[in-house]
Length: 391
Ligand code: NAD
Image (cartoon, rainbow, N blue to C red):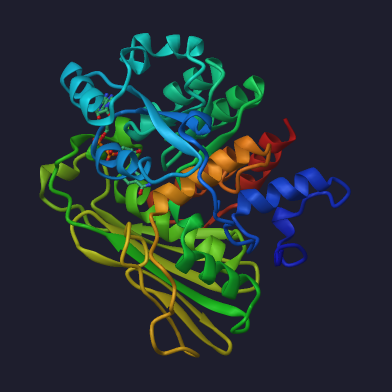
C-alpha cells in the first residue's frame, strides 16, 4: 500500500507507536491504493447478507435496489418506508416477505429479524443519524448515504452507536470502488506524474425542486456543497492523498429565486495543502457543471470527465491521450459487495464512519470560510477526528 501522508502533514500526525490508529487514519483519509478485490464467486442466496433499505426515494429506487439484484455477497431482503403504497409496490417487485417490511415507527422491531444484517440509510441528510443509530441499537451493520450527517455531533453519535453495538458503519462513497477513481488515487498518491501542484474539480446540476428537502437547511444541512460538492472534496483528498491545512470559500451571489432562501445556490472553495498545492472546487444548483476531477502535477496531468456520474466515466492523462481503458462498473453493487465482504471476513471498511465525520467537519469548515470570508485552518478538524478515533 502506498500512502504518502506522514511527514508533510504536521497537523495530521498520529502517534507512530499505535498502528491501529495509523490504520484508522489511513482509512479516514481515504488513501492507500489497494484496488478493490472483486468477489469472484457469488454466494448462494441463503448465505448472502440481507440488506434493508431505509427511505425508498430516487436513489434507492433508481440505483440501490437494481444494484442489489447484481450483488454477489448481499441481497435486498427488507424495506423501511412511510408509504403503504410503496411498500406494496416493492413487495411485489422484489418478492419481499411481509415480516421484512417496516415503517418508520415499527423499524426498531428489526432487532428481531435475523434475516437482515445491514441497514442502508437513504433518507434526507439530517435524518441519517436517527436511523443509523436506531439500526446500530438493533444490532445491525449500517451503510449511511453521503453526507454522513449535517452536524459533527450527529456523526459522532452514529460512530459511537455502531462501536457500542460492535457493528460496522460505512458511508455510501461509491466512487472508492470505481476503477477510474481507483486509478486516479493510485497515480496521484504514488506521484506517478510527480508532485501534484493543483487540483480542479466541479460538480453541479440545475435543481428543479423534485426533492424539496434538498433546499431545506434543516433537512439537507446546506445546498449543493452537501449534495454535489462533497464529491469534489473527496476526489481532491484521495487524489492528493492528503487533508488540507486550511480552506477558503465564497458563496455565489444569492439569486432572486425563492428556492434558495435557506441554502446556497452555488459556491467555490479552495483547499490549501501543506506542500503549497491547492485544490479549486466549485458546485452549483443553478448550472449544469460537467463533473470534473483534474490533477496537474510536475510531470503531467490526470483528468476524469465526467467524473462523478453513476456510469460513463472517462479518464485521460497527459501520458495516455486516448481515454483510459478502464471499465465502467455498477458502482453501487461494488460498494455494497465490498462492505458485505468486510462483514463476512471481519475486515474494516475503507469508507468508515470516521471518514464521513472528517468530511462533515471539512464541509462545515468550508461553510464557515464562506460565511466569515476568513481562511479556516483545519487543525481543529483533525483534533476532533483524533478524539473520535481514540474512543
Ligand atoms: P429522495 O427525496 O428521492 O428520497 C428520500 C426518501 O426519504 C424518500 O423516500 C422520502 O419519502 C424519505 N423520507 C423520510 N422522511 C422524510 C422527510 N422527513 N422528508 C423528506 N423525505 C423523507 O432523495 P434521494 O435522492 O433518494 O436522496 C436520499 C439520500 O441519498 C440523501 O442523503 C442523498 O444525499 C443520498 N444520495 C446519494 C447518492 C450517491 O450517489 N451516493 C445519490 C443520490 C442521493
